[in-house]
Amino acid sequence: MKQDKDLVFLASCQNEDLRTLCDILTYNNKGEIRLSEQLTDSDAYLHYYPDRMNLMATEIAEELRKFGSNTVRTICRKGEADSYETIVRRVCKRMGVKVNDCDNTPTMERELLTTICEQTTSKLSDEELRKLADKAGIPHKSLNHQMLVTAILFAIRRNTYLLTEMIYYVTSRIASMLLGRWIGMMGMSAVSRYLGMAAGPIGWTILAGWTISDIASPAYRVMIPAVIMVASMRFRQTALLPQKI
Amino acid sequence: MHPEDAKALQMLKKLKGFDDLIRLMMENGYEKQERGYNLGDYLKVNDNNYKDIYQLFKGVVKQVGIKMPELYIYNDPEMNAYTYGETNTFVAISSSLIERLSIDELRSVMAHECGHILCQHTLYNTLLRTIEELGMMFKIISYSTLGPILMAMQYWSRKSELSADRCEAAIVGHEVYQRTLLKLTCGLSKIEGSPYQLVDQAREYHQMKHESWWDIIQQNCRIAFYSHPQSCERAWEIDRWKNSWQYRKLRSTDC
Image 1 (cartoon, rainbow over the protein chains, first blue to last red):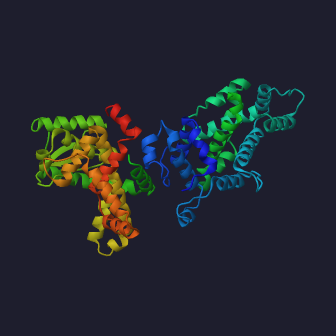
Image 2: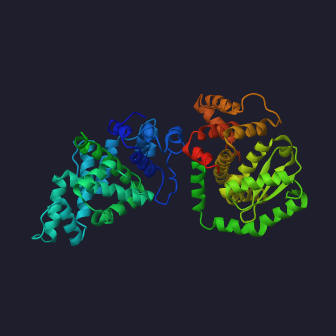
Image 3: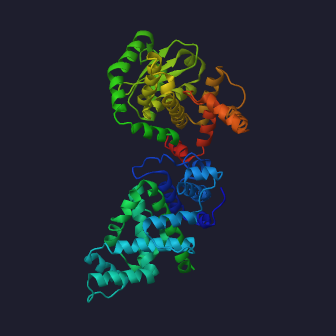
């Protein structure tokens, strides 16, 4: 299978993130091995899981693309699965995220993440929204519920830190829900400290609604969390890079 | 557990009711028949007769972490061992194994059989045997109708052996595993050359098998109804697995 340009960055991601992505692809939320996975019996998996995951980034990328493609079509194309860009586009369509035909993969991924965060925000209670507004430094005393939602939604679009924080909880909740463990994202923790936001209001409400039901549907129960995970990994790499420098 | 075995078991477990039925059949029928057969014709090993072998077995059982099965020796020039039972388990070892294998190698075989008990292979293995017997007893439900199911079950059976092999290698280490397998393959009490020669042979076999599509089909058809994987495949699988974190972890905790 040819290397996918949109997934080359996986090789430079953190071990723990890659492990989470790998686990999403190979095990279901009951801890049972996925029937259609082909990764766990590969030489790369035997050699590098779980401590040297970046050395098996190519295999993870291939597995991801195989999961997102039609098996028969892949065989007909001599094992060449759909590109990651096609898969992301498909996932966006499934999740009701509006993307343009000319959008590239990072743009679509960011739109996907933003939409998830926005939909989650609109499901938060008034108290949770006010706590969130406090943490984000949005004055809210004179705002009613709807105005507050609008203010936070606007902030998510404008404020990278707020978006980053929400993405952290989305991916954490996915990992927690699917794999029964929280993922530690060092870069995310730094942002978290900067904003001083607590896990409370957002963490447990995220994915409570439509996201869970979408993940639970058979065809996309692997691809949606996997794409969200890849998207958040890329987002972190690009969004937090200037901060590191 | 080998991932392919885990997948196959997962699918088998989805056949709701089948496992309960087989468990019931085993508990009230097969297990008692087998125990009667063992007590009738085999030698039951305990602390009063072959104390060393029994102690060796107890050690392996403790390491694997299963309930103590009964141990029997039976008279057979063919080196073999088997296990059976879901609630009352036993392991039977042929006399030639005891005569021709070293202590470490005997531990290896015991660990393999205990691995089958640990992974609960006997339950689904009984289902496989029942299908085979149905095919032989009732000609209407012949192999032609049960063939595909039987082939699928044999595929699982081969993968289940790989899981038991992993248990074996985790207990005794990959070198002893390879040596034992080599002796079981050639049937000789002494081996010459590297204990890893079956791994090299596996590479040669894979090369030969993948020369053309026709070769792949031919070889796969040849082994389609095998209950055990070929020796070189087993050697090759453990040689790959020895590089994994699972193996390192199991060996470092001295399972």
